[in-house]
Amino acid sequence: MPDPLIRIENLVKRFPMGENSLTALDNINLSFQRGEFAGLVGPSGSGKTTLLNIVGSLDVPTEGRVTVLGKEVGNLSNQDAAALRNHHIGFIFQTFNLLPVYSVFENVEFPLLLQKAEPARRREAVMQALEWVGLADRHDSRPNQLSGGQSQRVAIARAIVKNPALVLADEPTANLDAENSHIILKIMERLNRDLDCTFLFSTHDEKVIGYLHRKIQLEDGRVTADERFRPSREGEE
Ligand SMILES: Nc1ncnc2c1ncn2[C@@H]1O[C@H](COP(=O)(O)OP(=O)(O)O)[C@@H](O)[C@H]1O
Ligand SMILES: [Mg+2]
Image (cartoon, rainbow, N blue to C red; front, side):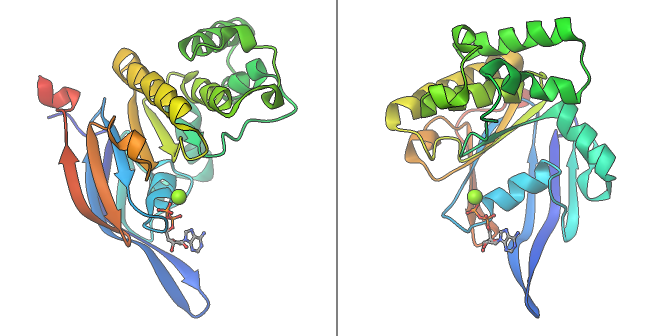
């Protein structure tokens, strides 16, 4: 077995609450291989976002060790954490988080500007990413001219334009109707397969759960179940 893409060991996260603290994650142990399509499933408040934020190096563990692509996120400088995110991790949010004053093209281009990529490469990568999500013809539109489903497809293009090893998606269908939820999941499934990109979701949406290859149940900051429905790519070899 190669080293996992993500290794989480004895992870505890506490948030200060007045004189006490709230334990959001309580001794989590998990690893994810490259190519997984996995979901954190649990009710609101169970710790899904907190866990994704730590894996995405947006937050740090209180205790324990989280290693992403061989880097221990709790020990990174701000600059190294930013470099890990900019080059290797794509983010998709429940509320899409597109920048309203920019065009679709510019929104998708943004991560490549952070990487200081050359204009010709940016243009090619942005149009390719927009084609993957079926929105190349909307590159000139503004976010407010798009439906929710289209907005989330732009957000997916923005997440994958840098060809990341890992995409983290925090309740990506929470603001979408059933039809658009299925469209989004099918796009992500195809990107997982064709780009060999690892996807880690959080969700409590039943429609999403049916697509997962692995379902990790979180309750009160603990893993209460970890089920695989299809072998991960490593497992198939
Ligand atoms: N920045 C924070 N400060 C204090 N408490 C927080 C913070 N972020 C999350 N929490 C608490 O941690 C617990 C887990 O939250 P969260 O990870 O957002 O759960 P979920 O995404 O599953 O709804 C909740 O009790 C929440 O109120
Ligand atoms: Mg959440």
